[in-house]
Image 1 (tube, rainbow, N blue to C red):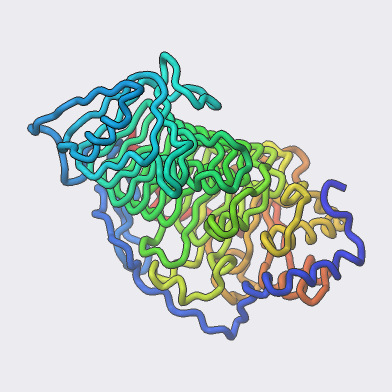
Image 2: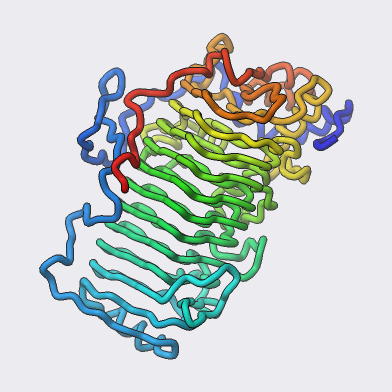
Length: 512
C-alpha cells in the first residue's frame, strides 16, 4: 500500500498523538472570544471597493498599482546620482552605502562581490542594479551576472538589509546569506526584479531562513525572481499591504512562496516545485495585520515533496509542522481565491483549509489581529488537479511529535484505504472553524469548490477531516471511530458548490 498498512496496532500507535492533537478539540461549550475589529491599518479603499455584509470597513478588492510611486516619496525633480562598482571594490561600496544620498543608483558590474557583512540601506530612493541574476547553482558571477557572496559574512547578518521608501533591486544574485538574503522592512514602493537568492547546501537547517523577505511594508512587487534552499520560505510577503508576486520560481525550500498576515495580494504565474510545501496563505497569532483579499491565479504547484528541513528552534513553528508533500495550505485566512492553478504530485495533499486554532489553540493569543484565527470565504474554482497527490502523507516518514496533523492524516487514510478511499482528496478542510459548530452545518465558513478539472475516476474531491472529533477519538486509541468522524464529498452537487464571496476580488485586473 502507498501509505501505512492499517492494522490493529495502528490504533495503539496513535496514542503518541495525545498531547498534540488534543490542542484542537474545542468543545461546543468552550467560550471563544468574540472577534473584534481588525487591529491593522486599514488601507484606503480603491475605486472598486465594496462593503462587506453586515457593514464593517470597506473592502479594497483591486490593486490599481504595479510598481509605481504609490507612497509619499518620489525622486522626481530631485538630484539623482549613479555610483558604479566593480568586483574588488567591496570595501568602497560598503563605505558609500553608509553615506548615501537619497535617489542614488548603485550600479554593480558583472562578476563576484564578496562581503563580510550585510549591505545596509537606510535612505529613500535607492536602486541596486547588477548585470544579471545568473543561473541556479552559480555561486560566482559571470560575464553576464552579478553575484553577491556572503559565505564568510558575520553570523546572523542578512545579505541586503533595507529600510526605505522607493527601493529597487534588480539583476543580482545573493549567495549564502547567513540569515535572510534580501530583507526589506518597514518600507514602501518596493521592487524586486530578476533577483536570485540561493544557498549552496540543500536540505540544511542552517541555511538562511528567507530568500526574498519584504515585511511590514506597503506596495511590493516581486517579479521574475528565483529562490532556492531557504530553511523557511524562498519568497515571503508578511504583514504587508498591497503585493504583487509574479513570474517567480521557488524550488528546494521548506516553503516555496508564503503570503502571511497580508492584505491585498496578487500571486500569479509562479512555479512552486520541489519544496516541502509549495504556495501558502496564512496568518500567525500576535501580528497586527489581519490578512485578507488574496488572489492566487495561474500558478503551478507541483512535486512539492522535499523532506521538511526547517529547524524547530530557528524557524516559525508553523513551517516546521508542515508535512512534506503539501501543495497549498490556507490557514487563518479569509477572502482567498484560487483559480487557474495546477496541482500535481504533492504526496500529502493538494489544498488544505485550516483554522489558526490547529497551530495555536489559545484564542486570546490571536487578539493582536482581531482574533483572526478563523478561515472563511475561500473560493477554489477553475483549477486543474492532475493527480498523483495524496497517496503518501509526509513521504511516509511520519513524526507525531514534530508534525502531528500529518501523522493523524496518514493513519486515517491508511485505514481509509480499507474503506475505498485510496488517497487524501484534493481539498481538505479541518472542520474546526467556526470553533464548536454543530456537525449539521456542512459548510459554515463558505468554502466554494467549483468547475475544477479532476483526474478521471476521482471518488471524493473534498473531505471534512473534523479535526476536533477525529483527534479526540484518535487520542483514545480508536482509529475506526476517528475515521467515522470524517466526511467525504464529491466535487459537484454538494454544499461546497457555492458561488464564492461578495464583493468578488478584482485584484490584478488593473495590472498590465
